[in-house]
Image (cartoon, rainbow, N blue to C red):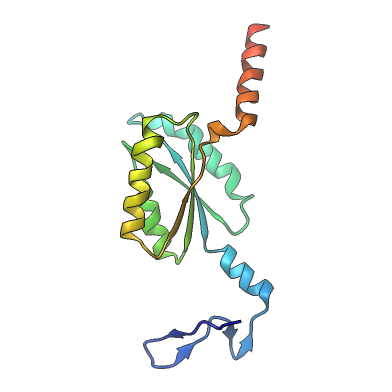
Length: 157
């Protein structure tokens, strides 16, 4: 197994596997690596400030259950933060992996073209980030089932 050494500005090489001359365990290393991920919930965006409230509630609800993974909300257009804003923030926090979960029901023009363009721009600007674009939430069959259930309950009232 190779050991990564980082050169510091004081001339002394630093080994991230060691702290205070003690070798870190694999559990400690995994904890450090787990803290270097951010799940970005990407919503469309709207000029109406009330539109964003349900998305902010989702982030607030899941943040406490996300362990060491940071959860951030970004918007494709109209409002901030944008995907680029969140990527910049993550680089500043030494986060190395972004996973983007589009909060869209289906793949239309935005997910076919606009979002991949934004992802490519973020990759070009921040090559140190590993950026992964996930399938939209609408591809999850549980969401279709929930919508069907709501429709059936609405029909019966």
